[in-house]
Every structure is written in structure tokens, then in C-alpha cells.
Length: 78
Image (tube, rainbow, N blue to C red; front, top):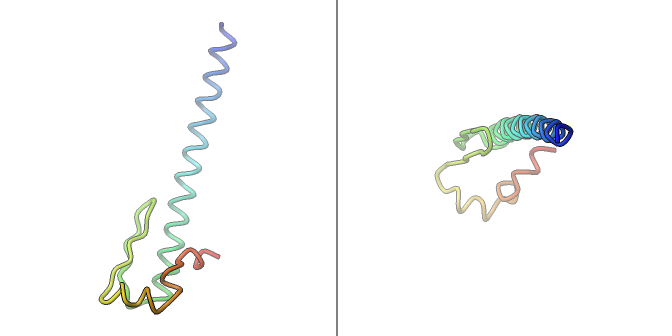
């Protein structure tokens, strides 16, 4: 029984470390994406949160139809 409890504790620590790394990676990717959008489209407003990037601006819906780069912002992470 002690071995099972020790194994469970090890798994909990591994899961916590993995979760922390994933959260840090998501925040870093959001920050990079925010900077990329600001550089590529300086006229747009960009709000960066740890796990999302909010892009806003006048006529953004129409611009998304006309500019493929706005439809695929993930390309800015390359």
C-alpha cells in the first residue's frame, strides 16, 4: 500500500509540473502572438491575456474577409 501511495504522490507532482509548463507555454505563445499582431497590424487594438489574444478594430469583420493574414493569426507564430 505504501508503494501505491508513493506512486500516486509522484504522479501528482508530475501532473502539477506539466500543468505549470503548459500554462507558461500558453502565456508565452499568447504574448508572442500579441506582439506579432501589433507589428503586422498596428492600427488594430490587441489585448493579451495568459491564454487568449483579443483583436479589435473598426471594420475588422470586413478586413478579415479581405485579408487572409487576419483569418490565420497563428501564422504569425512561425
